[in-house]
Image (cartoon, rainbow, N blue to C red):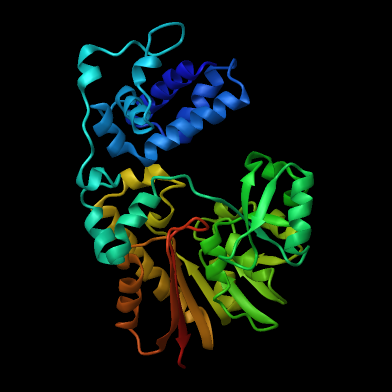
Length: 388
């Protein structure tokens, strides 16, 4: 496909999304209909689509319209490219620019310049203060591809060498002692022997760093209460010997966890509600709660535009309910850890304050907030100690 044909395809996909289609479904649907497209074409399409999603408001301003066509015109202008050179109407290129399109568009201002909905920008300011603008701008770029090295299986230097043999270039990153930043060969990771042998897992750097803040005594009983795919319990289990448990209210999210644990060389016992109550008490219960994901929006840019004030209020209620449900599972003297990939105080410190306001059994033992950075997403973790 020519560069212009790729832009035309991106416009088609973006229009489908604006009509309500999910990004991944719109892209895969286009790919099924377009057997002529090679792997490089599909990769370029993804880059176009997700690049636009990250910068949707500023590109709409620059392009003069919020349509797929207007967004791609804005994307080219943001890169300093005259869209008239690609919008020619020739072959499979998009139709030539109209006179109105040639003069439409203006520099984005306010929250549009930062590619945030108007109602969300005040939340960034209130939660992040002087760092708010930098965080918003960071969400406009691609996220780093980060790996966690399973130190049960091998050392970092050994892993880097093995990855290089498979055409994957990775470097140690200081955000966490297990972290590698991949700079070349990202699409080869899940097919690599390193991945399939359990030596590496895809895991954000801030998530890795947050798990390092949790102390695990030898033989500890550790529960990942909102386990999802199980990446965090696997990160904890890679650090030492203990008894590892996972639970999720939607068990289907954990369907791949047994295979992942086997690859990693650890045993994670999956618990339903009845088993959960029988196995309590745990030395550590981790609640990686459902949240807005505002710290991860460069990975999931659709979520930035889908979030509503009502949904945010609903999430804060769910987060408090999770803490209250998980707290009785912790042994006396144990730790209740609360984590989100959000940068909003409403979901982080405010949730902890509401929980502490309803109990006298807990006190804050520590908290850490990780910024959106070149090595990790925005992340928050608080450690609560059970007093009695």
